[in-house]
Each structure stands twice: as C-alpha cells, then as structure tokens.
Length: 174
Image 1: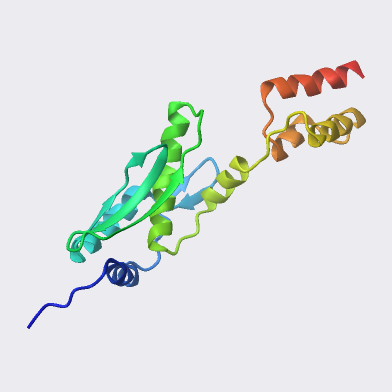
Image 2: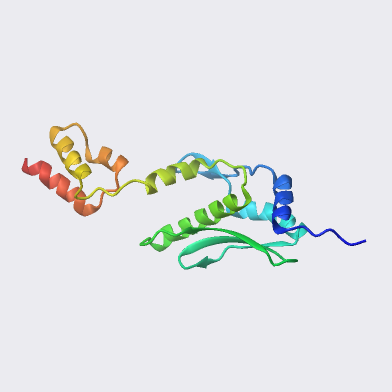
C-alpha cells in the first residue's frame, strides 16, 4: 500500500488546523499591550513543521524579510516577504526585522492573532512627512492662530528637525 502524498498547501492546511489561534504571551510595557512573541511562535510551530516534513526559513535578502516554508519531500515552497524601511539605526532595524519576521510568518500561515502593538506601530509608520506642501502651510496657519501646537502636529505628521525649526521660526516672526 502506497503512502498518500500531500502537497505543501495540504500540509499547511493540516498544520493550521492543529495550531489554532496564537496566544499573546509577551507584554510591551511602553504601549501597555500584549503581542505574540516570535520565539514562542516558532517553538509552537517546530513540532508541527517536523510532523509534516516542512522547514521554515526566515532570511533577509535584498532588504526584505522573508518567511519561506519548504516541503522537504517535494521541495515545493511558499513564501511571504516585507521590504525593510531604509535609514534606520541598528536598534530600530533589529526591531523592524523582528516585527517583520512575525508578520510575514503570521501572514504566510494565516494565523489568528490580533496584535495591539502593531496597530500603534503601523499608525506611526504610515504618518505622512510634513514638508513644503499645502499641509505644511495649513499647519503654519493653525500654529500662528494658536489652534494647534507642534506636539499636536507631530501626532499627525512626521516632522523633521528642519521642518520644526521652520514652523517655530515662522511663528516667532509673525
């Protein structure tokens, strides 16, 4: 009797049904939120990856964090990747790599988990840069009128040191 062969997608489906929802077991004291730790997730996954003859790789290539699952029997693979932000200091880059490893793996396996910490991070990273645009002029006008502060502007925009100086100098000269 021949042993039934599964495709990589069938194996991942079986793995998904066994792993269930991922628990948030790590705390971020800065944001007072919980998230699932990448190391805990991998620890949970390894027995299932072994069971289904799958291997997980998470290399960084061409400025992208990749999560790749390879079927050791068929050599089929599936992957998910995210491009890393540029111009980060080493500590922020390390944090981004950890986040992106977690997110690419969560996405690749369609894991059920809500990450409160991510919501705050995404909000910050998606803020537009305030520079010489209509938004800059609007911020200047509101600053002069006293209806907004620099701190409030920074809640909605990324404000470089140069732009902040321009805003403050403009306000002082009016």
